[in-house]
Length: 397
Image (tube, rainbow, N blue to C red; front, side, top):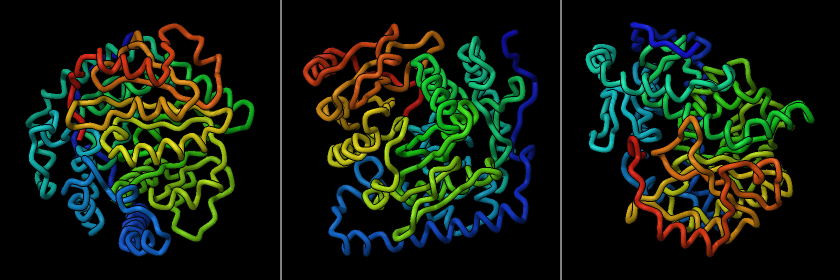
């Protein structure tokens, strides 16, 4: 039976409240991440690290990055209880307007009447609910987007899922990972090892990490991100996945032993922890690599190649608006021995960038599927010249 949309709209007032334990943990994380950020410049100088690589740059060098960080790090309870009203810089979708945020001004403060504002524009999310129903048909139940009722999550009830544009977008990501064979590949690793090993570069507020944990089973999941962004994912994941291990790393600390849970690594410390991380099954990036500078993309390509070793796969989905985004495909094609460009899936992920997989070694279970086009550096350059400019469903940050 296909999913059905109930006539119920969930707003912030329908969310669960943060417990005292939740709040104390969140305040501690805010202080810890703020401390890491405050010490970043000194760490870069002491270790001779390039600020152009490790500080926010290109689209992430704009003013919204530190501004939104300060809003969260000051530990205002109303702001944090409505954290999803500030995640538009990751998703391109504003919870407060229920619309794409490309022409929406910065949210200077989360309004006191956020619930009433969101309910007044609830109908705008109807399209997302309909499209979510369409793209989730035929998907296994454990590979459907999950939307915890926390942090101001708002949207229409679709068989128990709170659906808005972000939910629809997340389901599109899951569809691509499902039809590409990546989720099956990860579950095979769970059967062999007891858990899969995943690194995500730029995890936003953590919704894909949570969805992959639900879809795959036990995961040793490491998030590498700017401290300005880690403040979101540490808060969100440590609350919605409170029974999981959640560890924020700082310099000089040993990584937790390879066990299921979430580990958060500030981006400027990645070289320190790279030897400890070892090889992983999957590295994933969604819609942020092309928002970085070419220098940063080259840096992450080197990091990813080392993480993949002989057995891992890099799955990325990015789009390029000429003059705005960094064209990453040619850069990656020059680093990895094997690359593949994926066709649109039956349950589409279109409108939000081209999906590609990369690896150091040949993986027949992924490369030998239908809809997979091999990439070489020269071939990809030709494709880029011939490819029309994509029109995103709703723009990224």
